[in-house]
Image 1 (cartoon, rainbow, N blue to C red):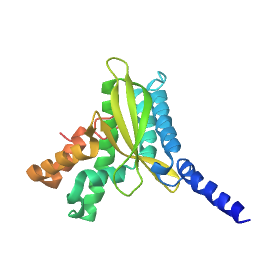
Image 2: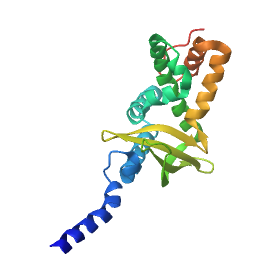
Image 3: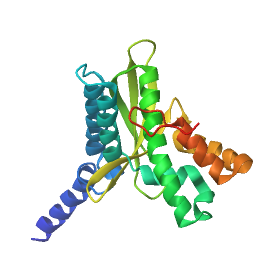
Length: 212
């Protein structure tokens, strides 16, 4: 009997790492799910962009719906504002979040269109630093013209739901790059200057008209 208990304990011990790779409630513990999530987002995006029946405005709205569901925009927006987020008023935070939602979606849409996003191939994964259990899904973005571009998607899994929380293109960190840019804007032009600039960058179809 003792031998059976010892054998069962040994089997359970060796099964734990394998179980952690599939179905855990952190992205780093569910590598397969994280990869499938990024592949699904990629396939849905390509399907929208390649649908010739959609008008430019319809395509943008469809992409926006995919992106808003797949990305924790609020977390990205807070990270990009950095320490300044804690110093602004609740009203300013609301204004900022509205402007940022349009800005981030517009930026992703423009960048993907510029590089000629044709397909995405997962090349590996890497645990992200920190205690949140995030995982980088490493990919190559196949282009209509030119060499593939390296893109690492930082994925979070929370309450069974996957979301993108950051992106690195060819080693350029989206969050850090924008944090530096926003900090510089606030230093030179103040918070209102940053908001005005964010709104000026949003030129997606169906966006609010810019004030001259």
